[in-house]
Length: 164
Image (tube, rainbow, N blue to C red; front, side, top):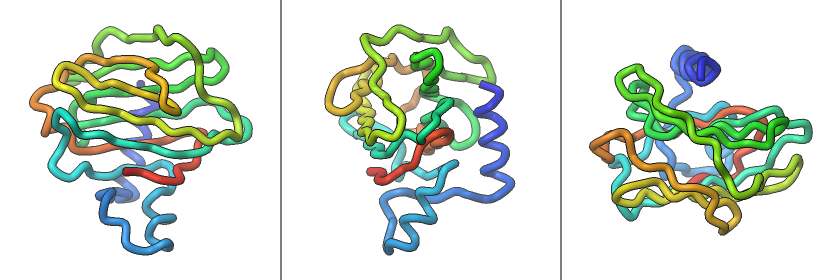
């Protein structure tokens, strides 16, 4: 989790923030989807809203992170994909306190140099996360209100090809 804090600090120092959904030209797409990525979620999250991340895993991946945050404060969902351990860690940080980490997954869906599609569905009690159309895990909300969750951060061993 300290790695995530370091990435956030670097993003702030380099002023790499954007608001996805406003991409206007191919040149801007490439610039805005560079990793590490930090972008705004217009209007924040609400039940029924979905975030889709399409990308390609790097050739020799170590890990990558996808985080949904309240600006640079609380972390509503930190999803850390670790290749060596073949695990996906999930957690939340509320008022500078990390909660209990969740690890259980039915399978490990990511493969080096292969494309993937992650869908994060915001439902009333939880996030429902699918990879390539298959449910991977649920993560029950620890941060409220949901519309305060207004930022997505992505870093690590991947290339982002599309973000909706």
